[in-house]
Image 1: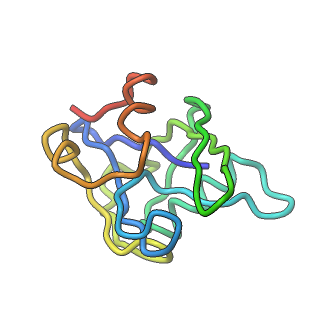
Image 2 (image 1 turned 90 degrees about the horizontal axis):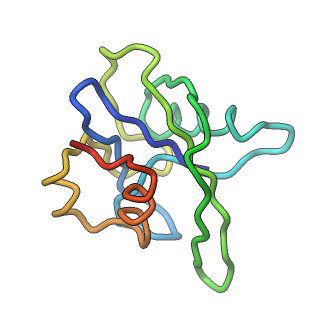
Amino acid sequence: MGAVVHDEHGRLLLIRRGHAPSRGLWSVPGGRVEAGETEEAAVVREVAEETGLTVTVDGLLGRVRIPAAGVVFTVADFACRLADPGQQPVAGDDADDVAWVDAARLAALHVTAGLVEALTSWAALPH
């Protein structure tokens, strides 16, 4: 699952993946659901691990299918908001880097396959 988080300026939170799949590409924070964990709890945990930020889940935006290394992952992406708007992200865990990006910066980044299309279909692109 993944977290679609915008700041008060409409910028989107992205991480640069540090591990396979999609190492070196930018994407929304996210990861696997652990045993006994809800998708919502997992997305909150993953955002904290990858960015140091605390978020609240507002709801499911949609699901995408992502092929990688001979398997296909079904990923649920959730709209989230910062619990404290004054927080600053710091890359951690699986993330090599983290950034708030506006539309122009997003267009210049190498992002994971299907990210822009999914964000577009959910009306969740940054400003």
